[in-house]
Image (cartoon, rainbow, N blue to C red; front, side):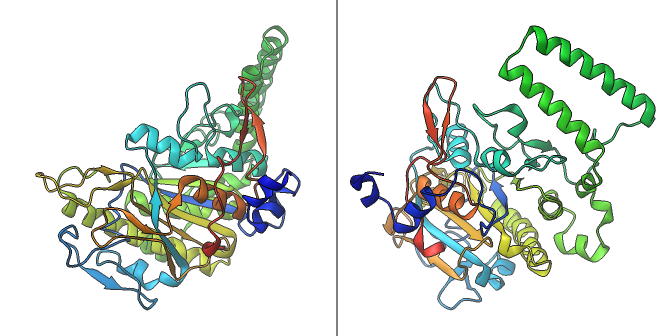
Length: 402
């Protein structure tokens, strides 16, 4: 490491870069749960309220359990749990297109021609995936693909946490017959690999073998919510998002290192306030129950929970009562996994038009997440083009959080 490079890194980041390039066994966060708000949530109407300002909208701000911190009136449960939460109010980015923003907020990289960057969940899966469960599970949404990494590192998609997950066991086929089918499949795969050897064919074989291992694993029961006590299910609620949070807790408890739960409907170009009120109530119940459940089971300290979306939304309210895309100011909320809760990092100005204090870039956020998860942010992986790609696109650890 040359002197110039060292001067651009914090001491903590430099020490992490010197560690072996594998997931640290003593990393504070052993797993991550990403609560992804599809469409882009309004920061002003959730975690960065502007009471009394023209841009503040219809919602009131309420006090939280931490003096001096206020959030939306429609998040009372999270307000009561503020000691666990760290709100970053100063995240700023440039991507205002949904598809490009989703790529950015899953990979830490702005989309670039010629490079298909892997999602952070896929990188965690690369380091920590168990033999008999997926390393990256996406609930209620497809998550983000593994990019140029192997196909088995892409998310295992659970369409609905409230419905039985298909293909977890060989339905209608006895064990002996299933074994014969697997033997036949393996012979076909062997023949194909002998004549068409490639990284894609090998990845397909790996995916198939992982599926077989899942079918025979007792840990696959983590996908089945029927085992949960009625009181636990009631705490999460019977909505899609709440059940997704419950499944996420079960999965990380069973050993899945990265789970993403999608909460849909946040693209509020019209009817922003009734829509955000409804979505906030779902968020408040599901995320609040998840934090309580993780804490009660001794899992919160080792599970990094992150709340984010495509981008923020405009301070101005359009003619349809909605807010439009606004990547320049957005909020992210983190909890658990060694994150210091009970605080706010950064600030926007009085009307939420611009970041006025402690701007945070997406690479800063991803370097912080990677560090807490025991990943080497500067590890290089070689894309098919031969280009070396680091885990994180530069950035600096957000020191206040850790």
